[in-house]
Every structure is written in C-alpha cells, then in structure tokens.
Length: 477
Image 1 (cartoon, rainbow, N blue to C red):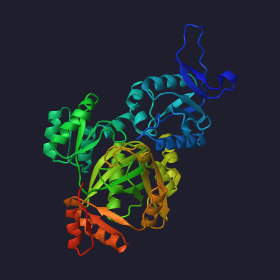
Image 2: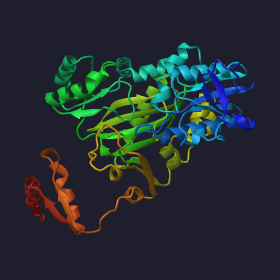
Image 3: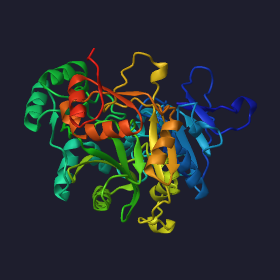
Image 4: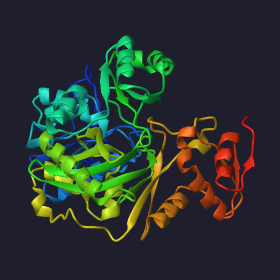
C-alpha cells in the first residue's frame, strides 16, 4: 500500500493522505513522508449512520486539539468527508482510510518508519475502532488508555458477569444463548419479557423486547440465527417501570472523576440515544445518586480504565442494576461537557496520553447552577411509514439541549429546540394498559386543570370517570 497526498499535484504538501495500490508502471512512490515527532493516532468512527454519529466525531476532534496543545503530533484516521475530524486543519496529519485492521496497521507501520508512535486511541470513535483493539494489540501496536483485555472484559458478557459478582453488584437476570433452543430455555428461566440482542453491537441494532415464546422464535428467525454466526445472543430480564441512568466518568487508573449522572425521562428499555435525559437527575434521591457514583468508581478501577467510561444503570424500587459498561466515550460526552463546562473529551485524551486527573483541578461535588435536558431529534417526517414507537433499537438522528434554572423549563426548551409544538389547548386522547393505570388519574386531572378535554378508550375512561373527572369515551379502531 502506498499513500498519496491530496495536495500532491500542486506540491502543496498537504498532510492529507489516501491509500492506493500501485505497481507495473515504474517505481511506485509513497507521499506520506512521516515526521520524526512523537505521534498519537486517533481512530474515528467511519461513516455517520444511526447509532454512530457526530457525537463521536466531537470526541475525536477535541482529542486532536488537546493532544496538539500538549505537544504531540496528532494523526487522525477516518473516512467520512462530512465530519470536522477530516477537515485538513483539525489534526497535524490525516489518513482518509476505512477503519479496518488491515488499513490501520499498514498506516501505523508507515508512521513507525520515522519518529515515535506512542499509540492509538480507540475509545473515541464508538464501537467501530473499539473492535480493532485486539487486532492492533496482536500486531504489537500500543493502545493508549484502557487495554484491549480490559475492553474485552467489559464487552464479553461472561467475563463481565464474573467481575460484577466479584464486586457484589447487581445485574438483571440474564443468559447467553448459542442456539434457538438455548434461548428458549434461558427465557423460561429468567422470565418474560426479555431484552434480546446480538453480541458487540452499537446503536441497539437488532435489539428487541420480546414478551412471549412466539416473539422469541420470531426474533431468532429474523435476526438471532444470523447473529449467532458472529457470536452468542444475549438475553436480559426486562425491568418494567425502571428508571434508566447514564453515568460518564474519567479514570486515570488510580482515581475517578464522575463527569455526569443523567436520569432518562423515558423508562428503561428505550435506547439511550433516543431518550431525553436530565443532568442533574430530576427525581432520584441524593443517596441513590451517591451510590451510582460509587458503583461507577468501583467498576472503573476494577476494569483498569484509563480514559473515558460510560455506565448504564436501571433503578427499580430503590435497587440499582448494572445494564452495561462501555469502556469508551459515549454519545452523551458532548452533552455532559456543555452542561457542566468541563472539557470531558479533552481531559480524557490527556489522561490516555499519561496525565493524571489531579492535574486538572476537577471537583466531583461541584453542582452546576442550572438544569440541562437533552432531547433526541427523529427523522420520522422524512420517512413516512416508519414505525414511530421507540424501543431498544436507536432511531434518532440528532439531539438538542435545553438549559434553565428548573427542570420543567429546561425540558420545555428542549422540546421547542427539537421542533415539538406544545399545544396550549384542545383535546387529549388517553389509552393505557391496565398496568399503567396507576398514574393515569393524576395525569388526567392535571390535563383537565389546564383546560384540555380528555378523550379515552372504554377501560381507560372508566378509571378516569371513577375519579370524578370529565371524560369522553371513544371506541377503539
């Protein structure tokens, strides 16, 4: 493989390279021309798609800025022309290459011809570069930050389960299936509903909540059997009416800084990329938040994380369950950084390059003077006919943020930013299942007090009417 520079035809020497396979027409020339500096290579996320978006590019760009300021030569590897990370002046050098082991190893070998390659950052481009950590390690290429083995502990369900048992932390009942028959047996043991997903996925692709054996068999026919060729299918007991919480932290291997604890507004089971969330949490008890931080710190130190880590928890009836740990930057990092004023991605990159958290004067107990609410933006208007019901598979294509002194006003601003037109009057249709009717009357009363007319299906209307509230019955279609 040889590399050509985008500016080579005009001899501009632009350090923006793409690879070619040459031979048969004289002596091939490589125009990469590595420098003799200390270098850090940052692996991007590749093309934007649902589940792998601009949030990760934000992290890569800020890593370039932070490491350049620290005196390192920054080398960006990505293949998306629509992102800032591939702008010619973001990094010192850019390789416009696909994120595959073959391409990345080849360009690292070229950079090693001169100067010192300190290592590759795989944490900032989402799941795509994270999957390369084992191949790079086997090729003798150093990984900056969290080791490939620690990444595998968090990603491998059996190894991670053993770690949680050792730490005394809770998980929803779960199992690992390598066949349809095994999946049926596990689901019968943990109990329906269950969340089913393939191994090593991002954006919740092919994830689904199944409520009975027929749904499980349909899932295995449509998605599961194909997934089994790449790895086992994971089954988790679905926690009804649980609150999901995201926690982002930075660890230097010895100490941990919890950057943000975010309470989801939608219940657990909605993909975190599709859920609105509040920082700080708007309903969790202070003792619960303290325990969430403590569990995050325990896992980060036990995994040997160096850099960023994201944890997803579920809180049900006061009990805390660990849903998953991602030993990388999460899509919430830009939101946390803007909400708190802490340059999370920059500090994480410096930590991966050897700095200690004590150098940055971070305060775990600092409370921002405002509430920040993140809301997802969906492309449904452009894709008529797409199922608008949210679930564990990500559907959003963007996000907005509302800031104010109170949660209510911050949430209202986030809805306005997302293009949601909040009605001030009119009729509201309510129809809920029996399990959700506990909180129905309070909702109907508040809507009535605001001047809305309440319409409801027969069973829902009966519950509202029994509470002495006006309601108009409409038939199910």
